[in-house]
Image (tube, rainbow, N blue to C red; front, side, top):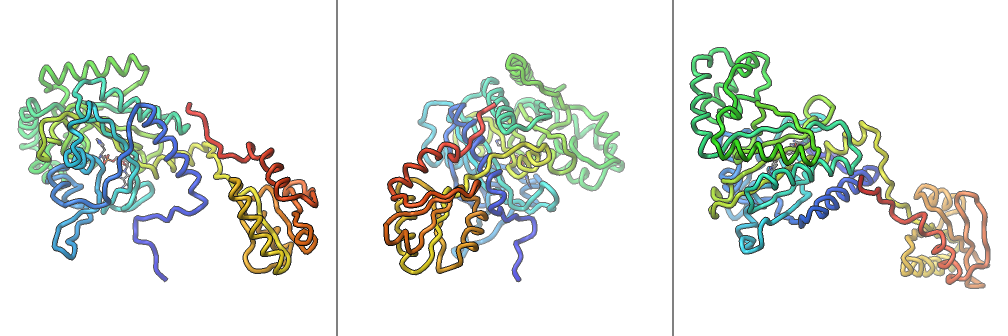
Length: 430
Ligand code: HAM
């Protein structure tokens, strides 16, 4: 028997209500802020991710799904959402649109990671990217948007951690200073940190190894090395978040794993421990579009794991609205009745009523069990009498009361009266 690949999930019918709920709130909140949806291909040229995310990052060195297609083009499954959206921004001429260009996506992401609870090799991200404006109010906007999304879902207890890692002006001096500090201590740190020292020194700050903690504690931190414009940008962002009553925690060690960030970086943490704690993260990336061959266009955004949001909803016992069951289950007895039942089901659907009919022939009790299995509120029963009189019997599945001799027109009118109770439930925002 085949099994799904390690680190992937089947999203079964029973889980679809939660997925629909999360997708609904993600797009609703994004649209509330004026963001438009974009979908990019599931794979891109490998070089896009290498240039965008940066060599030396764990993502590029260890986690991409990269392959050569039959035409010998080197391709990579989408390993993060930002670089593909910037590629589309450049390729599709979005530079000519009024700025900022506000985009959002809900897409699968592929990373060859060590699978565990909340960490998958195929996961999904709700992400937004606001392109074309460097003002800190844009950083504040995307942080506020993510925070409103979690509030809309009914998730509580989130901590927002914030930091600034400077820009291309001030960061080189900081990195130099960080390396100076680490150089004499390289014998005391883990093997990974020795590699980071050469390839991705900022990441030294978020090593989780116990032996590296005392070294990190005394290391110089980026926030202390910001140039004046970066300092002002960060101060203004904090003032704006304060004004919006969005509490944040300064985390001097927060640097994020992808190479494109400048200035603001942030992470949203839930209360659970382990790999699934980071519910979302992002930041500003003012150099990425230029790195990909465009002009210097500033941008800011975030990505947030859908599976982790769903795990958190389950942990917190947040009620999820059910996907509405078919309203009517059409039962029939005999060949002629099946013909009439097929027509009745069709007419019901034409009138906008969900209807399911029994295929083949089964005994009535078995058909009514099926109706229960589908969660149908009503069964329509068609036997010889109904065929003859061109009517139906309507059975309320809850109180088992039956009405006989209804024309199809009567039936649709009856159902219209009960319809509102069965319409798609949507939780109000906040
Ligand atoms: P990221 O921090 O790598 O950022 O991923 C964003 C979020 O995706 C994480 O906070 C987490 O919720 C979820 N996530 C990441 N990896 C996994 C995994 N293996 N399994 C399940 N969930 C996962 C980015 O990808 C950036 N592109 C975000 C961004 C957008 N920055 C600016 N704009």
